[in-house]
Image 1 (tube, rainbow, N blue to C red):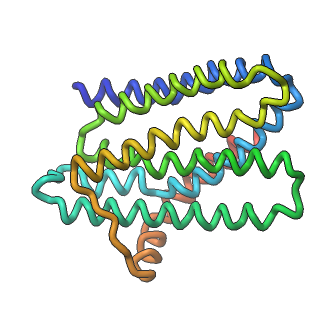
Image 2 (cartoon, rainbow, N blue to C red; image 1 turned 90 degrees about the vertical axis):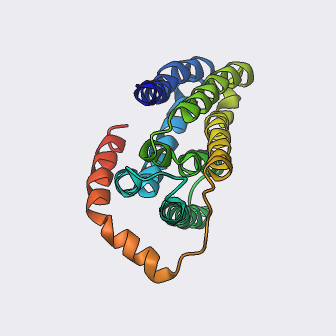
Length: 227
């Protein structure tokens, strides 16, 4: 029961933050600046869909029913596979972003760079892992605390129209801080280890989850096209 309640709090915190934060930002920075924030965020959501891939489904399925204390080798292997492949996907996206530097304006580039903290945070917080082992209470506390901190920082730091630059940095930074905390917790508490995986294993992982990925990406692209 506690795990279900914790999951509900995580979803609630993630859902309520934009509902509360975006009107606050809009009221300060104005419609023109705010439109640039949300358009660049929509691009970050596409990057997030790439990073999510199929791992939220397959990761949970792979470790469901396993005990991280007695099955640590198997759980840790899945943990490392997903973490490394997700970081590689994000790295490719960041390289692609850097290649656009000469073709987009400086403001858009800065906003996009800040928003890259958002998919990074999703990678680091490893919520799929805690869901799979049914240990969601600590993650829920950390995530809710980071969302509250985010709202407070938005209120404190975004006070002038030109402060719209801070929006992705504040949101992404708070999310990423929670991600670092949860990754540290997973490695210390449950002994998760990140080991090198060979290229053929990366290819195998990506091919295996491609059908789930295509479905989730289609939904994300549809939503993003309506910004």
